[in-house]
Image: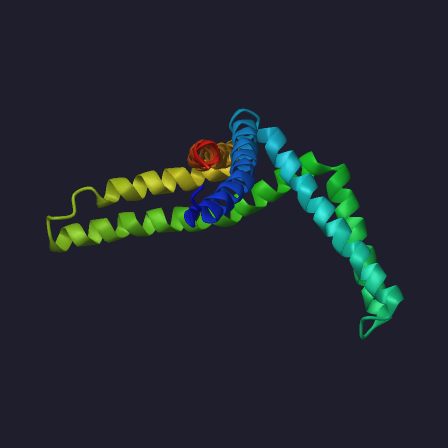
Length: 198
């Protein structure tokens, strides 16, 4: 019986690939589920994201209390105050996720919308002034008009655009999941091939 020096290396490769393929499979399936949920239930996705953030804030508050009682901070008083505020805010957000997500989206879009409108108006003005000097810029005013209308729509229907953003994130998650799923299947196939040839 001849000894093949590459056999131990092949066995190690088989074990390594066999130990990894399911990780990519689980990640791809989770991304697919999350992406589909965001795509078809954007309002519930916003609520879920809000609750996840609330849980993280609550954990931070608990850690602030723990650090204060363990004496691992410079000021126990301020650490307790900080922990109390974080716990109160986290519990409020967790118990009222729909309200908080709605207010958060509206706030962000109300901050963004004026800049979008200003950008559109500046593009229109620049296009009109540019036309006086040259006849090359023919569509700048139209782009500016569309940008301005988009900014106004952000103010009129912020929840629509918030849900649209979540849907776009859902599509991105699904597109990220597909290569991971294919990679997991390739790793599994390679692992089986190496195992049968070993």
